[in-house]
Length: 180
Image 1 (spheres, rainbow, N blue to C red):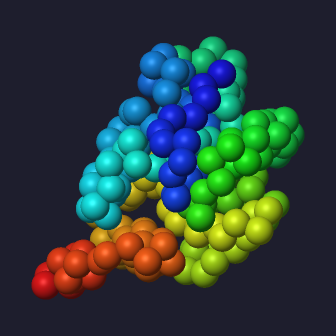
Image 2: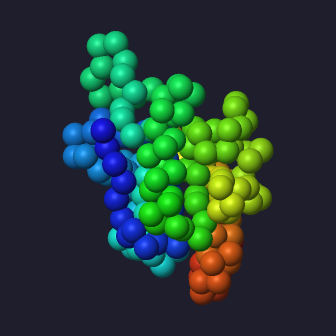
């Protein structure tokens, strides 16, 4: 099992899908390539990894037959089995908002089965009265590296989190994708 990391008094809680090979090996969420991308996003927001709380909707790496470094999406049953852990983390951290990184995290938190991220992002949802912003998972950005529009959408979602929290946003941050 791979539990969470970060500041237990964070305003922002990030929830991903499940640990991958690297996360399982190092016993920490978001330490592989997707974690590096997440660190870049946080840095652009003016935040360090230690200032947020990072978790996954599934606390273990979903098994595959003949598993090596490949991964699979957790089943609804696997997510439901781990939800009490996530609820306990939320109860301890008491974040002001949650960012669901990807469709699986959104499905597990919000119980929206088979809803595309593109349909869920761009607005606020609620999980146990805590505002939730859905955005694309960092691994999606890695697999669609040329998709500037998806990167822009993630950035818009992250700016909305900063605005919601009343955190400062520089002109450089606002114009990140417009060349300002």
